[in-house]
Length: 348
Ligand SMILES: Cc1cc2nc3c(=O)[nH]c(=O)nc-3n(C[C@H](O)[C@H](O)[C@H](O)COP(=O)(O)OP(=O)(O)OC[C@H]3O[C@@H](n4cnc5c(N)ncnc54)[C@H](O)[C@@H]3O)c2cc1C
Image 1: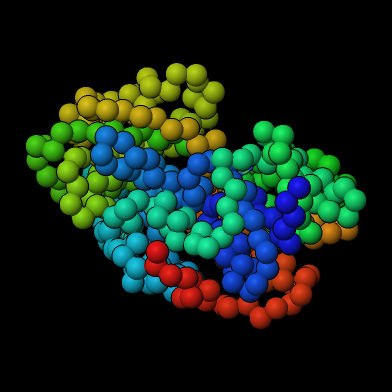
Image 2: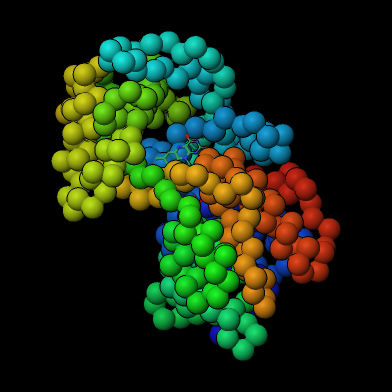
């Protein structure tokens, strides 16, 4: 069985940030990810020769270290300023200019490019869902869905809290398990819709819909690309709508309903050439923990990380990843950590 010093479960922003920093410090790290792609909710769907961000909509950095990562990604041409204007749908269903304008960043290649950047040089085990993590004979055993396994001296679980809970049932630290259980998530359903390019240009790129009964966000997603050949819209539901439809087997009519509602502004939105629908069961943490990581009281190190540790956005996942790497390093060999490891990561 392959053995690593540190196993990280989850290749989202938190897991990759943490893994990359520990890897650059010289630890032997493996990242296990259940999906084919990298980035977690920094997700990009490829369809019909184009792509769309059906998870994260944009980045608006506040913390200096996150700003520094964003600047590095801009230098690598992975990110660029997308817009400073997000319109708002008011109570009367009218599109209003925003009161506040500030730069929002997006990737012309799609947000999953950030995942690829952060994964540079890491030992990745993709398409493998971790089923259980157990301490056996002084080693962590990570059992995969397909019955294979790896072992590790230390483990970082960087998944949404409810997913961490399902794989950490064997842990006897009740306080730790209680904290994991306390973090609930709201859901989101995203419709990704493609239209022919001849449709006239719009005077908005995105609309946030805080008062609508079903809609959360409407974006001309292809406006993030430098030379888009097709029009791609992403329409996301609000949490209440997603809750009502979360376990619906056929999501196509659910996605069509979101487009029909968005068609109140642009009638042709209800007749896409292609419609795909994605269900995010764990979209945004409700009542995140105030701590940047959650440590279990176990014989060998085990730490949980993610957006739910300190916030509910990509930036909080990133800060949680950094804090978790520091904490793990302090429990291990206390090697010097490069505080801005992203500046030492090649653009790819
Ligand atoms: C629709 C939507 C819109 C959003 N918009 C924005 C936005 O505009 N701006 C913003 O800042 N944030 C936004 N967010 C929130 C943002 O996506 C998250 O806060 C952030 O990406 C979380 O990163 P993470 O690393 O904590 O978790 P994730 O990105 O969820 O990564 C966790 C990873 O763990 C993997 N995993 C889970 N269980 C297992 C297992 N058992 N074995 C192996 N792998 C496993 C998952 O596949 C995933 O890749 C949005 C989220 C959604 C869903």
